[in-house]
Length: 337
Image (cartoon, rainbow, N blue to C red; front, top):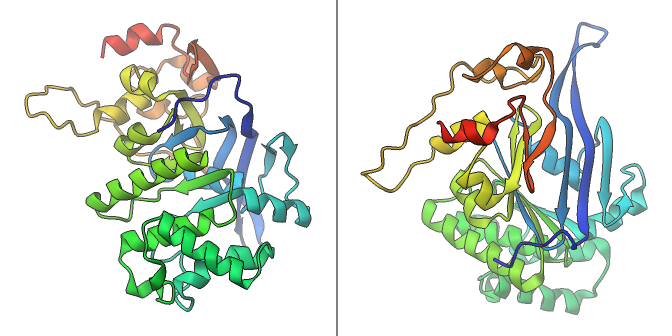
């Protein structure tokens, strides 16, 4: 993995106060009776050459945020700024150009590939859609991409069902790289694979990032994978970022109670370790009717009255380490647990 980009490196992607609410409709007139707040006022920045990990429980809004960043879905509110340009999702020409610079690797390698197309056609389809190469050039580019991701170019005429899960994900990676993107959104790219294959795909993504100077938004619920690959990590809970820090700082000194609970549940390969596990009580609240104030307060053992009255804002506790919590001395609190 390449070095962490410093503050002098310009941002490639900025998400500002992004919201995505899905209406809940009822009755014969389809009246809106509520909203699912999938992403609620999220702001983050990804610098060129950086790998930003995004972690949280299922249903916290990670995938929705990734698809918002890609422009696959339109935000309810907020701005998406890519390479200093505000993205207008209704501008067809701008979105077509954006697709050349931002690509996505989907979670399920079985569902994300068209079974009626050969892998050569799948990898070369973005080149055909954007009309950037003639047929001979596309053939050479497909062969080059297959070699880059560890597949034999002679298999280009085979169909997805003839490949294993790991090989299919390599096809998905090759397709994502076909247009030389600057940013790749990795939406849980290894969660559907066997553990041994996961390591191979993660190593491949790291090699490609170093060779091609790529920027990743890496979405996962696996804290071990995020720790291995990311420069910085954002922790999401119920549609909001609750903690953001460099990877070493977050894993070495987690400050938010939710982050500490997540990390305490990670298995440690040491039978002599007496690490205390923090058990979260209750269920994750519904995004339709989230708790007032701090959304984590219903499961937090340190919640006080202010947690129900006021919503905490992200504030910097140590350089580069921001946390959304009302407690003043989070560093001391984390050392006591």
